[in-house]
Image 1 (tube, rainbow, N blue to C red):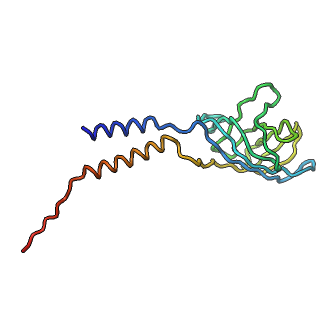
Image 2: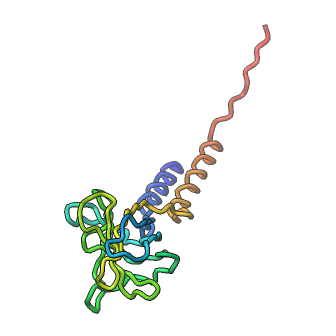
Image 3: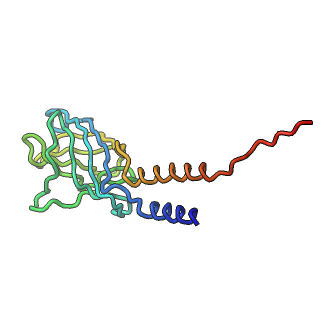
Length: 183
């Protein structure tokens, strides 16, 4: 009967184990060419996304909810709208040739209130940085999931439940008495 109680508790813990509320993805980019001269654009940071994947343009995607990082040593201030008063939904793609769509993502940094980082074509790793409507640089960019530094509460719960189950199994194990016979 006790074993059924422990199995029920384990089933309950597994059913309530939910992932974190947001996923994070690292990104970085470096200038490959400057079509109109100017300063090379190099940067890196983290996209914070929703935790719910969806299908956009036939690929798995997450809605980008935040951005932080630096571009040429200047802190990125946050997401900004294209030309409307509302911030549109930007998407981060986990599969396919590019991790941003053609609409990309707009953010502000330093003296630029609107910097656009986007993929104009499906060529892997090829992106553009556009500032205040003018193409500033062609860049190559990479991205990868950010490693979580702290396990989620559900992971801790499952680990503790596992240790408890191992302790219970060891405690309930029958004691074996050595059977010594002399000839």
